[in-house]
Image 1 (cartoon, rainbow, N blue to C red):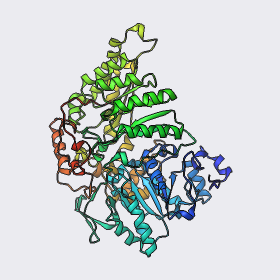
Image 2 (image 1 turned 120 degrees about the vertical axis):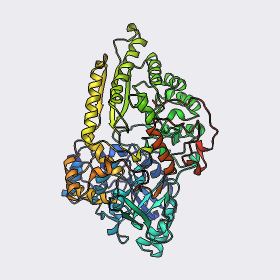
Image 3 (image 1 turned 135 degrees about the vertical axis):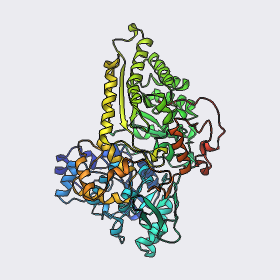
Image 4 (image 1 turned 180 degrees about the vertical axis):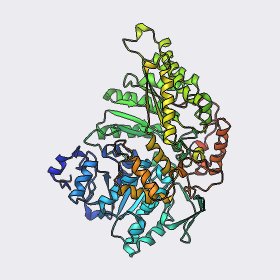
Length: 633
């Protein structure tokens, strides 16, 4: 146990939630420095409670610390009050386990989960005393800065700030990177030559080794390596055998309540659905499952080592996990005797899923969430959602019979080819679900309760490696107009008093859209906005839209160039240097199919030739079936 603290008691007591900064949590790892050759600071660039909920860091933290020569520690963005104190007192940012300055580590790794964390990356570098850009880090005096996670599938807006991006799932080749680092340090190799050598490791993208050329219209003409022998394209790295991949049996348990305060049991990766707006559904292809025997063993170990009172089955679509009946039967016995709740997110509305709900309702019953995404069948077909109004009403009916009376609907405004009729459909489907409740549950069985429906709308942001990467995005005022129409549509319904409506922040969605499809020219805008005080952009109370727009104007950057225009079919995208396993030709075909309002089969029913079969694993190698595999809940 580490008893040294980087912050005095007076400082800790002057700031909110001092537990964020003291380390020593259950299952955190400390090591003797004399046995360590590589120190890795792993950062989630947001507040502690959110970062501690992230499964990816827990996996790699455990894996890195399983190596005798590596000590991995955790870093999170200091909250605004602590940020001010550290600057005023010139306290360098430190890692939680040792409380040592991050500047003294060998690696500083970031997991990049969402675009609005980009100024927080600069905060971490700034407080650590690490130069902002890779070009300024010319020797071994500061850590190698490496990024991973979904935002690395278009890392260009932050390319200047990173030495390496790991494209794909991190379990495979970090060991090779560490071995190379140790060898280069022992041989006296320069930092640049280390990066050149690292470029040959699968999944490693070294942005400083590639040159971007632009056309007069601002689009990209070419992206090419500047060093002979390094790859012209970087292919994502994936785990092909989840049963034998590392999974932490002793995840770190925080002292304070995290956003996801439970055991997370990852049942599979990837998704068979082809929702055209969904980036995760493309990035993590193909679908790969763990065996229920491995999951049962992991569940027992996690329950023993954490003391959590809830276990969540994690995936993009849990009821598409083929061994769910066996796993659930085991967990019902194991968790029921220990009074541990079972959380089943991402279910589908089919008969089996409803049977699952009835089994777990005695352990935990909460509101049901339906990801309908669009208000009409026409638009659901455009986005390839694969859910019908009949499915929603049938699922709601069965759920109401099972005792549920709270339903949440997720919709998205601003889809390509959306009409006012599609927007009006949001209120109409919510009203029909409310009516279904009154038709299903007799008054005498309502126990003084009534149906509660929450409709939430986010705003469509076109993402790389999706069929909609060619699509235009609405401006903030257009989004707000659509939200107003949605609200009016809900208020016009007979059951409007039973429907609550929430919508997302339109201005923040706009910035997310700029970064999602941006290029390297945005690096200077992110740095300038940070210098002007932009931080925690994902938090509404701290987001400074006016400062961002002022910054873009000062630098001569047109944000609408990245947001508002429809891309031509042959445009070179900033992320085209990367290969996520799904081909651009497939995505383009799906883009054109969406314009025709046609749906495409999912991976279980028919191979659509997306390209993921190149990995030779998972759903790609299984026989196809015409059976109904369910719809999204």
